[in-house]
Length: 293
Image (cartoon, rainbow, N blue to C red; front, side, top):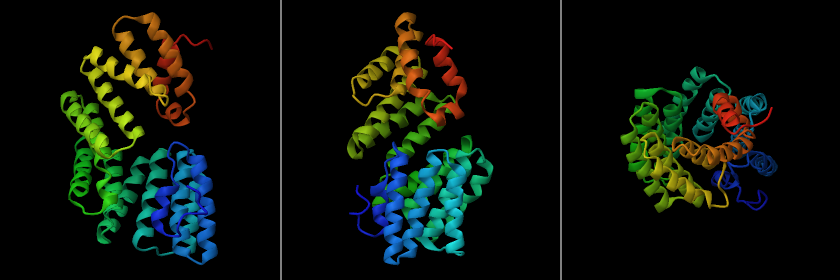
């Protein structure tokens, strides 16, 4: 949405996001922040800056994101309410994404407390879901369950919209522990939630998760059927090609698998976050795709 056409209120911030294109989101937030500042609404300008910091973090420009958050603290030394929550949330995200997971926990806990104290259910769910990401195993499930309980019980729409994401996150926690059967149940619940309330993109991702879990359960033919269906989507990404490659490889169809490994490598090697976080995964695609050095 055009940042010059959005109403000057906090509800507009979500309209300016395109998480698939954080660079464009960054520019929209700069324009919207400048409008807010020119109108004299310092609080809205500061709230917008928290989202600018997040957009920078998604581009791995962590120092710049941190500087934006520090400028908020310089301008508003004792933030309260929604601003306090968002500053803590985005500082936590920057710390976690830059490799300081332990330090991020205190920020997310602070955001959770502030949000609960001010009846900001959507932001409380966001904070709890981030705690579910940074913690391991049982603690991760406890925080995800807290987030899901609040999302289910709240009468605030920005909390209820989290249900699909939370079911998905809990599914991945169980998947990481090797409990694939239970994980599949949650992925299927998440897919149903997305079909009811999601977008084409979130529905596609939810289907991919079901397929990925089926592969872990050695239900290779079922997994391949799902991923082949996703391949026909114009927005099919490298993750779909990777899964098709892995399924074909498991079935012994190595020649066709090699072509998909190559496609997956060409697409996913452009993802700076994945390259930094999962180099072994990228190297596997390169090796099995027979990519020349």
